Length: 318
Image 1 (tube, helix red, strand yellow):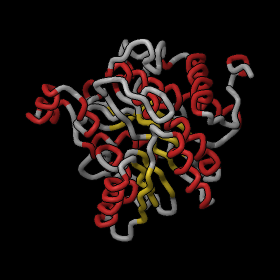
Image 2 (cartoon, rainbow, N blue to C red):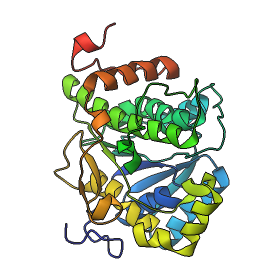
Image 3 (tube, rainbow, N blue to C red):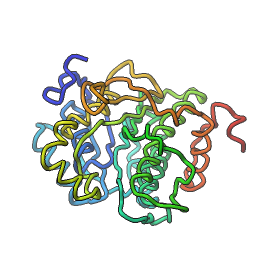
Image 4 (spheres, rainbow, N blue to C red):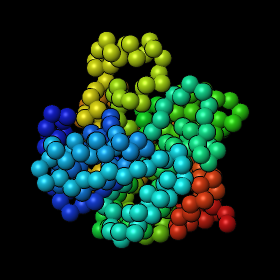
C-alpha cells in the first residue's frame, strides 16, 4: 500500500488513546515496532528480559517523541513466574489492552538449555511464554473495543523442518531446528486463538506475521561466518533494517480490514523485504487438529487455560 515504507511510515493511523504491549522491545524489531506505535500516539509498555536495556529503550522513545506515553516493564518469557507477575501488574491497573505484539524471541542457541520451568529455551520462550502471557492478559484484551494480538513468526516457519514431532527437543537438539519449530508454533497458536475467539463470539483479532530478512540481535548465536557476511553488507542486500522489518507487525496491528487468523509479511522478492501484505501461511499450519494438539499441550505445560473451547469440540476432548 502507498505510504508503507521504512522511510515514512506515513500510513500508520492515529493511535491516541490506545494501549499496547510489545515484548522484546529493548532492541531490534521489537524496539522499532514499539517506537513507531509511540510515534503514532499509542501508550506503549516496553516489555523485556533485560530491565536496564528495556528502560533505556523506553527512555529513547520518550526523548524522540514529544509527549510520548511509554514505560518499561520486566518480562522474562523463559520464566512463567515472571510472566504471571508482569500480567498481574497490568491486571491490577484494570485498564483495557488494545494491542499485544508477541515479538520477543531467541534463535539458534548452540546447545540445549532449559527455562526456569524445565522447557527447552527456544520453544519455551518463543511459544510457551507468549501462550501464557496472552492467556493471562486475555481479560484486559477483551475489555478493549477492538483488541488485536499480533504474533511474530518467521519466514523459516515454511521450512520442511517445521514440525512438532519433538517440540521440546527432548530426543535431539539442533539450534536452528528448535527455532523453526517454535516459529511454526507461533503461526498455529495465532490461528487457533482466532478460531477459539470466533467460536466464543469474542471480538478479538489474532494474526501472525513474519518480518522477512533482517540482521538483528537474534543472530548473535549464528556462526562467525554468517555474522561476518552480515557485517560485510550482504545482509543489507537481501535483508532490511529493523525498522523495515517491523512493518508487517505494524501493518497487522493497525490497519483496518486485517483478516482475522491471517498471515502477513513482506511482499517483495522471496518475501525477504518489501511492502507488507497478506502472504501464504506455512503448509504445516493448515491442519486445525495439529493446532488443537499444540494448544492442549501448551495449556498443560504452562498451567494457563483459556476460557474458550475449541471451535470443533470433537477435536478438544475434556
